[in-house]
Length: 202
Image (cartoon, rainbow, N blue to C red):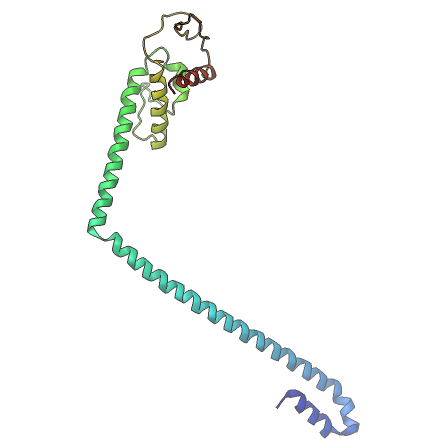
C-alpha cells in the first residue's frame, strides 16, 4: 500500500475534529518518507552503476592478465631470448667500437695547436688532474656528436699540418684564386668557416 493511502486512512479515522490538528504532522511524515524513498532509489541506481563498472573492470583485468601470460611466454622463449641477447651484444660492440674510434682520433688532436680553438665544439668529460680524458662513461649521444664534429674538422683539414708559430689567430692558407681567407679568432668564426668549407663538398 502507498504511504499516501495510509496517511489518508489515518486522517479519515481521526475524524473532522482531530484531522486538522494532526495534518501538519502527517505532512511531515509524508515528506520524510518521500525523501527516504528518493535516497534509496539513488543509492540503488548508484549501486547498479558501480556493479556494472566493477564488472567491466574485472573483464579488463582478466584480459590484461591473459596478455601478460602471452607476453611472458614470448619473453621466456629461449630462441627469442638468445636473439635479443645477441642484438644487445652487437649494439654494445658497435658503440664500444665508435667510442674507441673517437678516443683514438681525439688522442691525435689534443696536442695540436688548433685544438683549443675547436675544444668547445666537442662534448668532453671533465679531465683528470693529469689532463687526460676518460670517455668510458660518456653518453652514447655525446660520442656520436663528437664523431660528427671530428669528421667535419678532418674533412676541411683543420687538424692537418701545424700552423707556424706567432700571429693572433688561425690564418688559413691562401686559396687558388689568391684570395686571403679571414682570420679565425672565435668559435663563431670557426663554425662559419666549417659550414662554408663543407658546402663545397655537396
